[in-house]
Picture 1 (cartoon, rainbow, N blue to C red):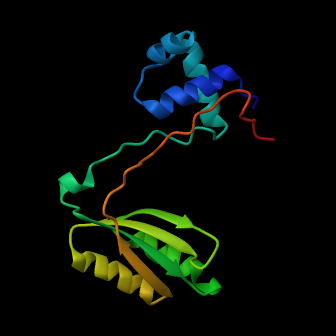
Picture 2 (picture 1 turned 60 degrees about the vertical axis):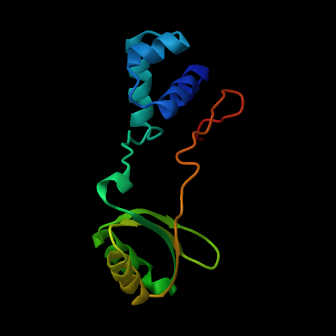
Length: 154
């Protein structure tokens, strides 16, 4: 799919506020609501837009402790780790990486006991290093797209 400056403008608007109506996006970038809708559908069909998400304040719901767990595994344990991790409540993100650690797992839990259970589960498969998250000063920072700076997928 070849993207033009209007596709990038739509992406910029949706990153800023994914709840904007197609009419409002169109008003801001100079398209009709049906034209915005069609472009969004095409970008969804192409996999450029993967979904629209909801951000919840977990702390207000009792998930007072957040942590980042670095996991180092023998190569043959990766599938077992992912299978176990998907079963555990409180995991909000798993990032597969290069370097010393295979994965970085972000968790939100209501108690230290819950965190301990997650660490123990991972520890049966490999080594872990855990750090508590004090705050997240930058969350979901959008990437600004311009037609000249961005390239369509090959």
